[in-house]
Image (cartoon, helix red, strand yellow):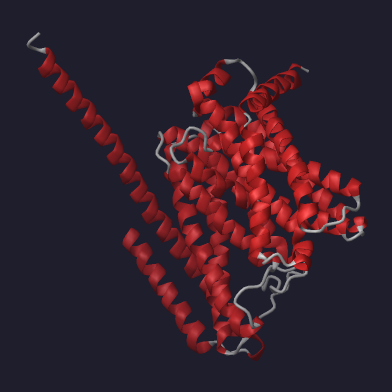
Length: 224
Length: 240
């Protein structure tokens, strides 16, 4: 039980920092909004095209934001050598991982709600199949946050961290991009039955990513 | 020894080239002479998988405390480098073959997409290796990254069986395990796989030796720097 309590402690710490510094809310969420606007420019604000591509564009915006959220999650550990404090805290590596990943997941979920609202309004999307959308979003977000956190600590403390994280994270999360886009597409098209295999893929990916991170995080944190 | 290895590799490649270019027949359903790309495309893909497999295995051996050693880390890096080159070649050659047979340079097909992702995953792995840290730290980070990246290899390999793809199924290792080509074509394909595997072995050997020399140089430079420093301090300290 102390494992989960420690994870909550770490998640609480990260979220408290975000609430006070407002970097996530005032920089990462607006960034998601800008990406949504850019796509509209790219497709020449063609309403039918935007409407059709909305799920993919939405998740592309989220994926780009993941890179920022992960970068931020580890930037706060670099400042004042907080990383050393975390290492010396005596908390289990796995619980630190779960905590940091959970904090990133909460931030991403918030971002998805806001960016999702922007997509609905700007790309003329009518929301259908809310249950499927929610399940897919939760599974995808957990997978994204966990994968991002693994690569965040992997590149942590390196000189080229900021440029390395996107190159490592984005190819690794392509299954999430595919599964989330397809399940959103199916739900919005009114055929939620087609979405479930993709939601299962997302869930499997999330479980694997969380398991891999829980095992690998401790040793990786020790080294850097 | 290495010279002999190189000589055997060159001879094997030459034999393959003769068979691939002149002895095997052109095929109407595979873009006539373009079918000869089979003897390049399939072996390069095989080498890419083999190389990443070796990287994953070496990384695993590095991670296990009992077998941990710089050798495995350097081997993993050397193999991944060759693997990335061959993945790139596979993509380019496949694209060149796709144009006459499928009528397109690129198709968003499961096999092609997963292979492209593989290319970028290992580019990231190589970038991670090049960020300067201590050998031990690099070993741990890159070994874990290599194992994560390897998850895409079986997905890419099995993608032609899992999904309905434009890319054809395995010529030799397919669902029914029946070889779909015969005669000189089958022989040439086997010869190509063997000679490319030799080439892979030679390239990894060269790259591994170079990496060992680099490691040695760094260690020597560090020792010299420490010695210089000690000497300098000694001279400065002496008058006081």
